[in-house]
Length: 257
Length: 257
Image (cartoon, rainbow over all chains, first blue to last red; front, side, top):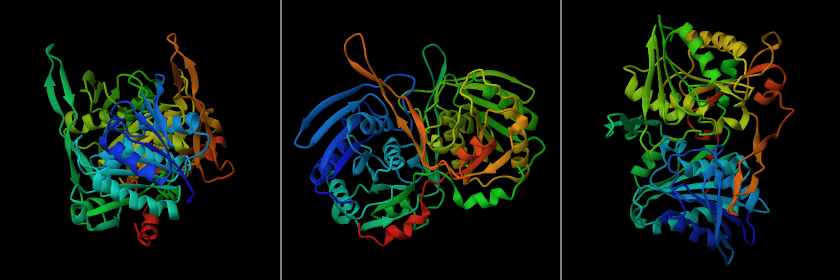
């Protein structure tokens, strides 16, 4: 997989203005030629949504020293599709998404625009990695996360990853010297316990804000990403691009539908 | 899992106005008490998106004979979250999504709002099934699909399905007598080959419409949903709610990240 100058596609879901994207672009530029296609506005929680009811706008922001930067009015997955089909002459060697402001561990992976972009890369046969830092602040410090991302990506560029998976990498928000290492994990079983905030508008109509908190169904399980992150490790979960539950096909075949 | 009158939550992504939803509600009402929470407008291609940048509205449309109907201004996953956390006193016995106007076979499962609602059900420990008919027309005839859905759902209510999976059921758009049976399948390997339709607005700015066609990477593989559907079978793919690629954890653990 390693090339003299690999071609790297970078995107995210926090928008072109996000500090985490800036750090990831810096990392990518040390590793190869870079094209950035990032959303104009925040697309958090947009998952694998694509824009089909309205047209998409693309704006070229800059091009210099092997770095091209575009913004896109659509979702993170729109960004990937546009890059692959309109902006690039060849398939990139690597797709990077993030660094997300906030965790995408456990079940958050299914709501995440950051990880959807990485999954879309995998669907298109591109080695794809999503990064998240466990700090939701717009002013989060991404320096340690950037160093960690660079180290992991050198390994990925040297040895590749199968395109039937992508990597969901979460980084704890602690000083770099306190990070104990990298742990390969499975996605923690859990869910978001919603607590809709019900309000009444000036015209006496109800509306709801979606809020809630994450519930970990297995806080003691040491092979999970939540456990790794709580205990000072960077977590890497291999995410399968194919949603089939192969283990259950034989079981279902016995039944009479 | 069978109860005297199971409680069934019905949603979709084609909106409250869709013919496929009407058919699925009729089927559900024959099987149990029903609550419908469906989007006000079409949410096709919204995948697992949740609404966090604006509030959500819910409107009660009707309540009679064990059938309650609500519309929601949000996405299909918002509909499920609202139903579980605001509108229902207990967990439903079954979540049904669809019947979608158009295929959700192969990789379309990851873009589909219909299947995202079913996956959200699985995450919340609810037996969940998504249905799609291979006819995109708003005027599609859902009679055969309704009969097939009813037969399959009776089996599901009798024998259950593990909540770590949900079922992605696609139905070919052929006369009922020509349907050869039901096949348990895996998701076909393939992708959408985008062909962005580039246009120029009256102010001389470019914009793109997302269009394209499905590319099947393995048209000969007889254990796939695309093959089953092309050959006159109803396809059932078990979809795993947990995105971890367990097969690859040991492999990654050998590497030095």
